[in-house]
Image 1: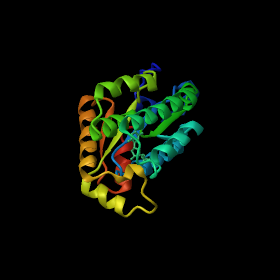
Image 2: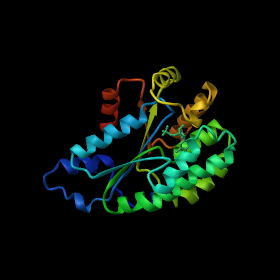
Image 3: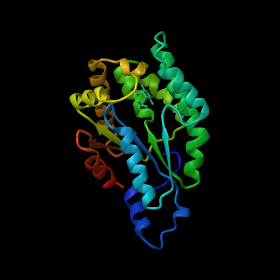
Image 4: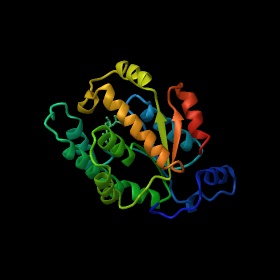
Length: 227
Ligand code: TMP
Protein backbone atom coordinates (compact mmCIF):
# COMPACT_ATOMS: atom_id res chain seq x y z
CA UNK A 1 0.00 0.00 0.00
CA UNK A 2 1.50 3.31 -1.03
CA UNK A 3 -0.18 5.42 1.60
CA UNK A 4 0.55 3.77 4.88
CA UNK A 5 -2.72 3.32 6.73
CA UNK A 6 -2.88 0.55 9.30
CA UNK A 7 -6.60 1.02 9.99
CA UNK A 8 -8.70 -1.68 8.43
CA UNK A 9 -12.18 -1.13 7.03
CA UNK A 10 -13.90 -2.50 10.13
CA UNK A 11 -12.23 -0.09 12.48
CA UNK A 12 -12.84 2.84 10.15
CA UNK A 13 -16.53 1.95 9.80
CA UNK A 14 -17.03 1.49 13.54
CA UNK A 15 -15.39 4.82 14.32
CA UNK A 16 -17.72 6.47 11.80
CA UNK A 17 -20.71 5.27 13.81
CA UNK A 18 -19.21 7.00 16.84
CA UNK A 19 -20.39 10.59 17.47
CA UNK A 20 -16.82 11.56 18.28
CA UNK A 21 -15.37 10.26 15.04
CA UNK A 22 -13.11 12.77 13.32
CA UNK A 23 -13.54 11.94 9.65
CA UNK A 24 -11.21 14.71 8.55
CA UNK A 25 -8.23 12.95 10.13
CA UNK A 26 -8.81 9.74 8.22
CA UNK A 27 -7.03 8.77 5.08
CA UNK A 28 -9.14 7.67 2.16
CA UNK A 29 -9.50 4.02 1.26
CA UNK A 30 -9.17 2.66 -2.25
CA UNK A 31 -11.88 0.08 -2.87
CA UNK A 32 -12.03 -1.68 -6.22
CA UNK A 33 -14.73 -3.76 -7.87
CA UNK A 34 -13.79 -6.55 -10.23
CA UNK A 35 -15.52 -9.26 -12.21
CA UNK A 36 -16.23 -10.49 -15.70
CA UNK A 37 -18.70 -8.66 -17.92
CA UNK A 38 -22.22 -9.43 -16.73
CA UNK A 39 -21.17 -9.75 -13.07
CA UNK A 40 -23.17 -6.65 -12.12
CA UNK A 41 -20.03 -4.97 -10.77
CA UNK A 42 -20.75 -1.45 -12.08
CA UNK A 43 -24.23 -1.35 -10.52
CA UNK A 44 -22.93 -2.72 -7.22
CA UNK A 45 -20.01 -0.27 -7.18
CA UNK A 46 -22.55 2.56 -7.43
CA UNK A 47 -24.80 1.03 -4.77
CA UNK A 48 -21.85 0.55 -2.39
CA UNK A 49 -20.76 4.17 -2.94
CA UNK A 50 -24.29 5.37 -2.11
CA UNK A 51 -24.27 3.17 1.01
CA UNK A 52 -21.05 4.81 2.20
CA UNK A 53 -22.27 8.33 1.35
CA UNK A 54 -25.39 7.69 3.42
CA UNK A 55 -22.97 7.12 6.32
CA UNK A 56 -21.31 10.48 5.68
CA UNK A 57 -18.16 9.05 4.16
CA UNK A 58 -16.82 11.20 1.32
CA UNK A 59 -16.69 8.95 -1.73
CA UNK A 60 -15.47 9.44 -5.27
CA UNK A 61 -16.76 6.95 -7.84
CA UNK A 62 -14.52 6.22 -10.81
CA UNK A 63 -14.39 3.75 -13.66
CA UNK A 64 -11.59 2.25 -15.66
CA UNK A 65 -10.61 2.87 -18.31
CA UNK A 66 -11.64 6.50 -17.93
CA UNK A 67 -12.15 9.02 -15.16
CA UNK A 68 -9.93 11.71 -16.75
CA UNK A 69 -10.17 13.50 -20.08
CA UNK A 70 -7.15 11.54 -21.34
CA UNK A 71 -8.52 8.28 -19.91
CA UNK A 72 -11.93 8.77 -21.54
CA UNK A 73 -10.22 9.40 -24.90
CA UNK A 74 -8.24 6.17 -24.42
CA UNK A 75 -11.50 4.37 -23.50
CA UNK A 76 -13.07 5.49 -26.79
CA UNK A 77 -10.12 4.04 -28.72
CA UNK A 78 -10.20 0.79 -26.72
CA UNK A 79 -13.93 0.18 -27.11
CA UNK A 80 -14.46 1.35 -30.71
CA UNK A 81 -15.77 -1.57 -32.75
CA UNK A 82 -13.94 -0.20 -35.80
CA UNK A 83 -10.57 -0.88 -34.13
CA UNK A 84 -10.46 -4.55 -35.11
CA UNK A 85 -6.77 -4.14 -36.01
CA UNK A 86 -5.75 -3.44 -32.40
CA UNK A 87 -3.11 -5.94 -31.27
CA UNK A 88 -3.03 -7.32 -27.72
CA UNK A 89 0.09 -5.40 -26.77
CA UNK A 90 -1.44 -2.07 -27.83
CA UNK A 91 -4.56 -2.90 -25.84
CA UNK A 92 -2.48 -3.75 -22.75
CA UNK A 93 -0.52 -0.52 -22.88
CA UNK A 94 -3.59 1.64 -23.47
CA UNK A 95 -5.22 0.22 -20.32
CA UNK A 96 -1.98 0.87 -18.44
CA UNK A 97 -1.74 4.43 -19.79
CA UNK A 98 -5.31 5.30 -18.76
CA UNK A 99 -4.59 3.91 -15.27
CA UNK A 100 -1.33 5.83 -14.87
CA UNK A 101 -3.16 9.06 -15.64
CA UNK A 102 -6.13 8.31 -13.37
CA UNK A 103 -3.91 7.49 -10.39
CA UNK A 104 -1.79 10.61 -10.61
CA UNK A 105 -4.48 13.08 -11.64
CA UNK A 106 -7.38 11.89 -9.48
CA UNK A 107 -6.88 8.91 -7.16
CA UNK A 108 -3.78 9.90 -5.20
CA UNK A 109 -4.94 13.48 -4.52
CA UNK A 110 -8.38 12.19 -3.45
CA UNK A 111 -6.94 9.62 -1.03
CA UNK A 112 -4.58 12.20 0.42
CA UNK A 113 -7.56 14.50 1.03
CA UNK A 114 -9.36 11.75 2.99
CA UNK A 115 -11.82 10.82 0.26
CA UNK A 116 -12.63 7.18 -0.30
CA UNK A 117 -12.26 6.08 -3.90
CA UNK A 118 -14.50 3.39 -5.35
CA UNK A 119 -13.09 2.23 -8.64
CA UNK A 120 -15.03 0.11 -11.10
CA UNK A 121 -12.10 -2.06 -12.29
CA UNK A 122 -8.39 -1.60 -11.56
CA UNK A 123 -5.23 -3.55 -12.31
CA UNK A 124 -6.74 -6.97 -11.53
CA UNK A 125 -8.77 -6.50 -14.73
CA UNK A 126 -5.56 -6.27 -16.72
CA UNK A 127 -4.20 -9.48 -15.21
CA UNK A 128 -7.54 -11.26 -15.70
CA UNK A 129 -8.34 -10.04 -19.25
CA UNK A 130 -4.97 -9.37 -20.92
CA UNK A 131 -3.05 -11.96 -18.90
CA UNK A 132 -5.33 -14.94 -18.28
CA UNK A 133 -7.86 -14.09 -21.02
CA UNK A 134 -5.55 -13.12 -23.90
CA UNK A 135 -2.50 -15.05 -22.71
CA UNK A 136 -0.01 -12.18 -22.42
CA UNK A 137 2.94 -12.84 -20.11
CA UNK A 138 1.98 -12.24 -16.46
CA UNK A 139 5.49 -11.11 -15.46
CA UNK A 140 5.52 -8.52 -18.23
CA UNK A 141 2.13 -7.29 -17.05
CA UNK A 142 3.44 -7.05 -13.48
CA UNK A 143 6.29 -4.81 -14.62
CA UNK A 144 3.96 -2.60 -16.61
CA UNK A 145 1.50 -2.38 -13.71
CA UNK A 146 4.31 -1.32 -11.39
CA UNK A 147 5.01 1.60 -13.73
CA UNK A 148 1.33 2.46 -14.17
CA UNK A 149 0.41 2.36 -10.49
CA UNK A 150 3.65 3.60 -8.91
CA UNK A 151 2.99 0.92 -6.26
CA UNK A 152 -0.56 1.94 -5.33
CA UNK A 153 -2.65 -1.07 -4.28
CA UNK A 154 -6.34 -1.24 -3.39
CA UNK A 155 -7.12 -1.56 0.33
CA UNK A 156 -9.94 -3.93 -0.51
CA UNK A 157 -11.10 -5.55 -3.74
CA UNK A 158 -14.54 -7.06 -4.16
CA UNK A 159 -14.52 -9.81 -6.75
CA UNK A 160 -18.06 -10.20 -8.03
CA UNK A 161 -17.90 -13.82 -9.03
CA UNK A 162 -20.71 -14.83 -11.37
CA UNK A 163 -21.34 -18.15 -13.07
CA UNK A 164 -20.87 -18.05 -16.83
CA UNK A 165 -24.52 -18.91 -17.54
CA UNK A 166 -25.81 -16.03 -15.42
CA UNK A 167 -23.28 -13.60 -16.94
CA UNK A 168 -24.25 -14.57 -20.49
CA UNK A 169 -27.96 -14.24 -19.80
CA UNK A 170 -27.45 -10.79 -18.22
CA UNK A 171 -25.35 -9.65 -21.19
CA UNK A 172 -28.00 -10.88 -23.63
CA UNK A 173 -30.64 -8.82 -21.82
CA UNK A 174 -28.49 -5.69 -21.64
CA UNK A 175 -29.75 -2.76 -23.72
CA UNK A 176 -27.34 -0.87 -25.97
CA UNK A 177 -24.77 -1.82 -28.53
CA UNK A 178 -21.92 -4.22 -27.84
CA UNK A 179 -18.40 -2.71 -27.94
CA UNK A 180 -15.13 -4.16 -29.30
CA UNK A 181 -14.38 -5.89 -26.00
CA UNK A 182 -17.84 -7.49 -25.83
CA UNK A 183 -17.02 -9.61 -28.91
CA UNK A 184 -15.18 -12.31 -26.95
CA UNK A 185 -16.41 -15.91 -26.78
CA UNK A 186 -17.34 -18.14 -23.85
CA UNK A 187 -13.82 -19.63 -23.64
CA UNK A 188 -12.35 -16.15 -23.14
CA UNK A 189 -14.89 -15.44 -20.40
CA UNK A 190 -14.00 -18.69 -18.69
CA UNK A 191 -10.26 -18.00 -18.81
CA UNK A 192 -10.87 -14.50 -17.45
CA UNK A 193 -13.06 -15.77 -14.61
CA UNK A 194 -10.50 -18.47 -13.78
CA UNK A 195 -7.85 -15.74 -13.78
CA UNK A 196 -9.79 -13.75 -11.22
CA UNK A 197 -10.11 -16.83 -9.04
CA UNK A 198 -6.35 -17.37 -9.27
CA UNK A 199 -5.76 -13.77 -8.15
CA UNK A 200 -8.20 -14.31 -5.26
CA UNK A 201 -6.31 -17.43 -4.18
CA UNK A 202 -3.00 -15.55 -4.31
CA UNK A 203 -4.21 -12.51 -2.34
CA UNK A 204 -6.95 -13.63 0.05
CA UNK A 205 -6.35 -10.69 2.39
CA UNK A 206 -7.07 -8.06 -0.24
CA UNK A 207 -9.74 -9.74 -2.35
CA UNK A 208 -13.16 -10.76 -1.09
CA UNK A 209 -15.22 -13.15 -3.20
CA UNK A 210 -18.82 -12.04 -3.53
CA UNK A 211 -21.47 -14.40 -4.89
CA UNK A 212 -22.79 -12.29 -7.77
CA UNK A 213 -25.35 -14.84 -8.99
CA UNK A 214 -27.66 -13.48 -6.29
CA UNK A 215 -30.08 -10.54 -6.53
CA UNK A 216 -28.60 -7.01 -6.24
CA UNK A 217 -29.63 -6.35 -2.64
CA UNK A 218 -28.22 -9.68 -1.47
CA UNK A 219 -24.98 -8.88 -3.24
CA UNK A 220 -24.89 -5.44 -1.60
CA UNK A 221 -25.40 -7.04 1.83
CA UNK A 222 -22.39 -9.28 1.31
CA UNK A 223 -20.31 -6.21 0.44
CA UNK A 224 -21.43 -3.87 3.22
CA UNK A 225 -20.78 -6.58 5.81
CA UNK A 226 -17.11 -6.14 4.94
CA UNK A 227 -17.11 -2.37 5.54
P1 TMP B 1 -16.51 -2.18 -18.38
O1 TMP B 1 -17.42 -2.99 -19.28
O2 TMP B 1 -16.45 -2.70 -16.99
O3 TMP B 1 -16.75 -0.70 -18.49
O4 TMP B 1 -15.02 -2.43 -18.92
C1 TMP B 1 -14.71 -2.22 -20.25
C2 TMP B 1 -14.06 -3.43 -20.84
O5 TMP B 1 -12.64 -3.30 -20.69
C3 TMP B 1 -14.45 -4.78 -20.25
O6 TMP B 1 -14.70 -5.69 -21.31
C4 TMP B 1 -13.19 -5.22 -19.53
C5 TMP B 1 -12.09 -4.54 -20.28
N1 TMP B 1 -10.86 -4.27 -19.53
C6 TMP B 1 -9.72 -4.99 -19.83
O7 TMP B 1 -9.73 -5.86 -20.71
N2 TMP B 1 -8.57 -4.69 -19.14
C7 TMP B 1 -8.50 -3.72 -18.19
O8 TMP B 1 -7.42 -3.48 -17.59
C8 TMP B 1 -9.71 -2.98 -17.89
C9 TMP B 1 -9.68 -1.89 -16.85
C10 TMP B 1 -10.85 -3.28 -18.58
